[in-house]
Image (cartoon, rainbow, N blue to C red; front, side):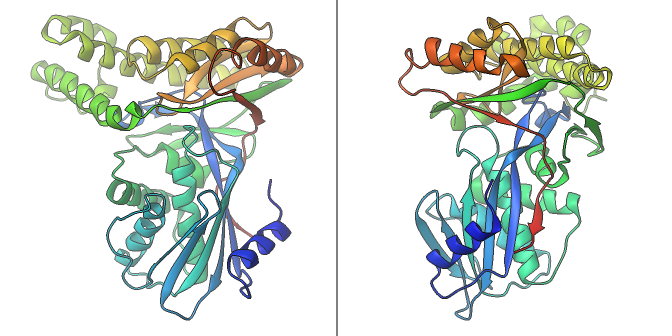
Length: 388
């Protein structure tokens, strides 16, 4: 957690003689269950993390928006009235894209200086990108004394990612970033954009994140491939039922009836999506009734499906899930995020946390090139302007 004094000092070090006027906190996210369902009109169940990204802003008189990232040690400038097209460095495109979307919305931007600092791990599948987009948007809006409601803000941030980062993401990351609530998970219907805040009821439990510190390069190229395979499967199902809009509308009986018409890989991709969409309401119900055992079983089932049917896991993620499964007091564990690296999330009895940490150190860290970073998180508030 970064305090406001640290934020003020950081901003002044980056921009000597410039005191921040605005500070924004934008959380990362962990998806408890419901992976690769959002772009199939399904359900997801994320939380906003206690770890967050921070954006500070001060006015400028040079006509530019200057953006400094402490993570990359770089400063990028672009005209406030014409942010331009995507360009290097890649991280700045998330900021540039948000600026463009605000201008398109009829909000003129004043020149300013932005400093970005984050304790959300980059490239770990906990949506540092959505935090950057939403945090930037709120900072620019505050500097220009404008406001946008939560859902339009989330959609604006997602559009920036589509156009400027060229990532065809669903709506989950930006929605939880703006709608997060302390000690609650967000049950989000990605088709209707309706949602329910569900209290986290599991007493004497801890959410443990295990970061592989690995991001395999195959991930970025395989994400659109998975989307294409889902669309191929849907098209086959639609031939017999044109009313189907997305895989969310199909069930396993329907899929099995058409299995012979599908490539086996496409069938398995669709099987993951259909079963994962079904798991989310079951997990939400387990959460409402305080049934940690059922919730944990669904987490393990989700990981198996992501590993075997969707094939977005990797050796590091699988090892962490297997280690967690063997530790008494671990209810469940699964990869979270797009896959091919990143993090595992585990629901653990509080008195078993240390046993899990020890098991990871003994059985994982000696096996792989990079040790796992193990830390805890809690469900926190969504993005907000914080007083300086």
